[in-house]
Amino acid sequence: MFNATSDLRRPGQETTGGKNILCVPGCSGKRHTDWKGATTMCELYCKQDTLALRGKHIGPSCKVFFAADPIKILRAQGQYMFDEKGGRYLDCINNVAHVGHCHPEVVKAAAKQMEILNTNSRFLHDNIVEYAKRLTATLPQTLSVCYFTNSGSEANDLALRLARQFRGHQDVITLDHAYHGHLSSLIEISPYKFQKGKDDKKEFVHVAPSPDTYRGKYREDHKDAATAYADEVKKIIEEAHSNGRKIAAFIAESMQSCGGQIIPPAGYFQKVAEHVRRAGGVFIADEVQVGFGRVGKHFWSFQMHGEDFVPDIVTMGKPMGNGHPMSCVVTTREIAEAFSSSGMEYFNTYGGNPVSCAVGLAVLDVIEKENLQGNAIRVGNYLTKLLDEQKAKHPMIGDIRGVGLFIGIDLVKDHEKRTPATAEAQHIIYKMKEKGVLLSADGPHRNVLKIKPPMCFTEEDAKFMVDHLDGVLTALEVTETKSDHVISKNTVCSTKVPKEVHVELPNHSAMESRENHSKKRNGVCSDEHTRLSKRLKT
Image (cartoon, rainbow, N blue to C red; front, side, top):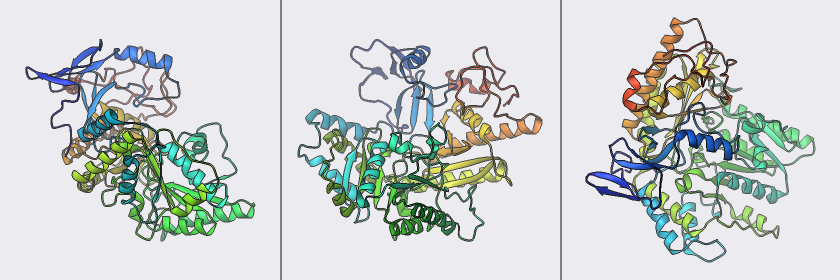
């Protein structure tokens, strides 16, 4: 299986005297020595200049990971990313680099096809039909018609068009905290976004409770949470009908990601689909984040709910091209024919182009050849076991949930009240970054640590991550025991730090070499960044 413990050379490097030399014609940037002592990376600007140029030329709403102290990534391979000084980070965030960053088979397929032909899909070409055939073979038989696009947002936007054209209905039911993309049509159905902005919910959008059995309306002690949550959808439909409105679609991620790694209770989707179809609507399964074998046992996450549940439309994206921009909508012949009957041709310039389809085929090949679904089961089960052990040890861990290599750690201040540990979660992801582990926090309260790494993630990686998490949690709990102070979410730095970051960062630079981490200690704010007034020392 491909991972970064093997040969770390990449295209464009030559080996001379035991060291890899970067070969980029015309490059005048700086060269650095990586973690193996090889000169492999190049940057056009120093980090400070890159930040300054980003501030000048990139929109201010375009954020970066670890905004208070971002890392500058120059390259990545397998399950690792490398900064401008060669520092190595274990990537537990990137569900986009599905089969591993810069997988040689995927890179080779893209380069080979690019040398021969790349054009739009109005020209007859074998790649698009071969890929469509291979892709639909992974789905239930009724899902047989493909529309290729370039991003998850494009796919979900097109899915809404298909749904609305099918019966001529307009309204959409979405889940609370859901996120389905950045287009205007998708912000409208994404409470994760519109609830944070100035936009009001549109009258054709209906928000159902997220089927969260840990901190939702119906919890794990409910006798039938699936039916209770599905009945909420039924009530929405009845109310909409009473107001003269008609339901076009229910849309949901098969497992909510931005909503906090939520796994719907068994039977929920079947019951919802029954209510929605009876109302003349269709069920859209958003697999943009969670498809292509991430759950392990199944290729698609919706398949966890049983063979008796088949969506009417499935959207997919992120992992589809392993970083190459491609996505797809797959639906039934009946819905496709209804869409065609409008008389409007559907054309997407880049969707389904020969290079994208070659990349997609290579990704499918790698998933199969390297048995990445089996790896997701094996490593995912091992990681969940390790995390369950940490839950028994650390009172801050309220819940561990997930399937395969899609796992959430719900952090709490109080087990009984399940009070979200938001500031603590932000502190933890920054401390883990110092240890060389990249995590993110999300969910309605931004207190859920998200784990969705490349599928080549190993048991050794899982152990490395959990060992460091154990250390960070232990230090945090010791601090809380010794101090009467608490993290205040109302305490902010005097400099412009993103709202989601309410943590005290160390007074040293995260760019220092990994060897010096054991010598570092948190301190008070530097002149550049005023720290929390109530300090958290670790």
